[in-house]
Image 1 (cartoon, rainbow, N blue to C red):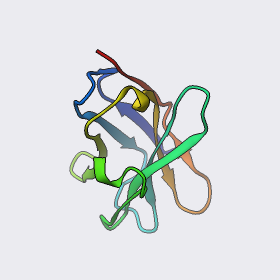
Image 2 (cartoon, one colour):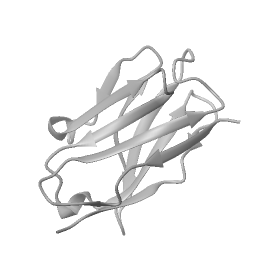
Image 3 (cartoon, rainbow, N blue to C red):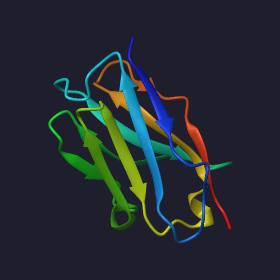
Image 4 (cartoon, rainbow, N blue to C red):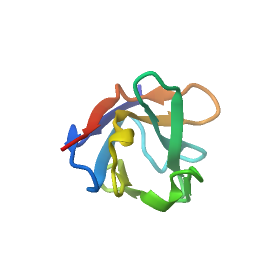
Length: 117
């Protein structure tokens, strides 16, 4: 059973970088045809796809967040990470990491990150 766990600070100051890591267990992040994504949901709003990294390391970003987002991976730790630069209070949201392969999706439990001074 694949499991994903988000980790990182739950409070980020405005203008700073929001950094999260997703630790994957029960499966390798280099498994063929598997895609690893970040999605967020602000209070009262819908799900927003932020970007992801696939099994061969190709990275893709939401056009609306591309200028502020960086996604990377550490295959030795079976982790992938998200950095969102120049955070604002509007970036306050629950952040999820998700495994997708065209079949069943696996979601982390999500982590609530506040951007506030």
